[in-house]
Structure formats: structure tokens, C-alpha cells
Length: 185
Image (cartoon, rainbow, N blue to C red):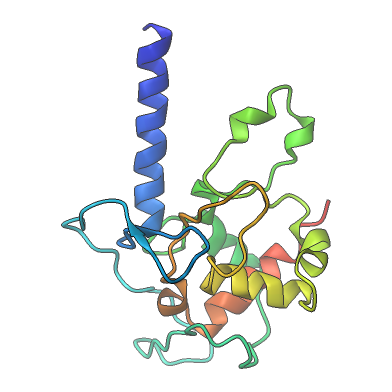
């Protein structure tokens, strides 16, 4: 297979992974929240709302966490957060399809990790200093439920779905944050 065909195949696979991770959110935001840009026609399939339930809720009672950043979250479960991080929908949220926890500096060719979202190696160490006035947990919370509010350096556009506030409940969010807070480097 020649190099061009190989690159098209890899790019196509990457786009399929992004589409799978992003569910039905078909807009891209450039940081200017007043002008979202539609990038594709709506798909015929839609991602189901989060099917996970909080350990404090009765099964079937899903209450989305929304985009309120001030309501206290329950204690997070690191192991469950890791499962939600790496497992694709409908069980988890497939974060690993766009972000990596690997230390790119240890690779011979770090460009191989050129995913759609920033690498999160050492995020627990950086998150509290990334945005003035934010603790690490506050920064991570905002980054998950309001991903276009503050864009990571080198990522002028967010492809991360802005629907996680409706797809996560408070326990899911607390668990993901707890897991990410273990990622120091």
C-alpha cells in the first residue's frame, strides 16, 4: 500500500474514532461562543444519554450534572473514573479516543500521539496552574462540562462535545475528576 493510501486510511480511521467518541454533537467552536460553526450534517444515529448511574441514586434516576460549576460534587471513585475514561459509550465516555495519558517525551516520535485533544500526562500537576483562580478540580470540571470556555494551548478549536453536562451525572463527573487527579507526571 503506498504512503498516500496509508495516510488516507489512518485519517479515515481517526475521523471514525472521533465521531464515535463525540456522539451526536456536530458543532465545532472556535472559542468565540457567539458563533458556533456547523461542520457536518446531523447523523442518523444518536448517542444515548449516559447509561451509568450514580452510586447514590436509584437505578433509572439519571440527573445530569449540567454546566453549574459551583454545586458540590460527591466523593469520586478513582477506579470507576478510570473505567469511564477508557471505556467507549454507552458504558463509559471514551475519553481515551481523543486524549492520551502517555508521556509523549518518552516516545521516539511524539507526533504519533497527535490526537484531537490535548495529552493529559501530568494533568494533576498542571491543572491547578493552568487557569488563574482555578483549583485543579475546578479546571478539570470546567474543561469537561464547558470545554470551549478555555482552550488548551495549541488547540484553537474544540472538537470535544459540549454535551457532557447532560451526559454525566454528579457521580460520573466526580469519578472522572478523581481519576484525572491521579495523573501526575
